[in-house]
Length: 236
Image (cartoon, rainbow, N blue to C red; front, top):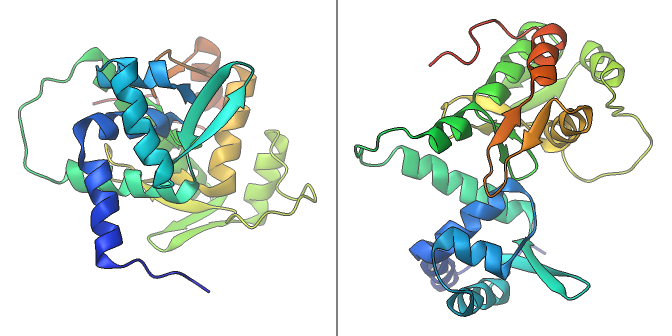
């Protein structure tokens, strides 16, 4: 049976997310990595003691979950549904009133490539989606995405076996609207596998204290050669 949230419950969750401090913490966790209370407090610009109170409220509301490792406790988004909700709010906010904010180096890096919970986002992700769509390996639409037989073969050659015998209730391939590019990139199991594989190959690397991903020289060549990205894929 599916629970239907009451307006009061929706308002309570919205109130939690609507606090600037907690919104900063949730956005920091959109990188898909688990972070400590101290790391999240620094991201939000508050003391660790104040941060602990905010984190406890979000754990109680099932927005966050905790993982203990030795003496340390880490926080992460409680589910993909929470990540999808935060991402949807980012899209709504991006369409909101325009304000003048000069684009700084950090924002430029985020727009180029970043992690969107468990998959790649930004210009790189949109360029990859375009390439896979143009080559007929993945069929993209506003309603979803379909991996063709040619696409399964391409991904297997790249080191991603979609028929490895493991059972998963997660959708194979989804489209996700990129909040900075306003176009679709790839999510679902395929999107997560592409992030994991390119990290494994050393094509991209995580930047400390940021969701932004750094494209390595090896990756720059790989994305152009294997995914046939055009020379101007990152042009502003």
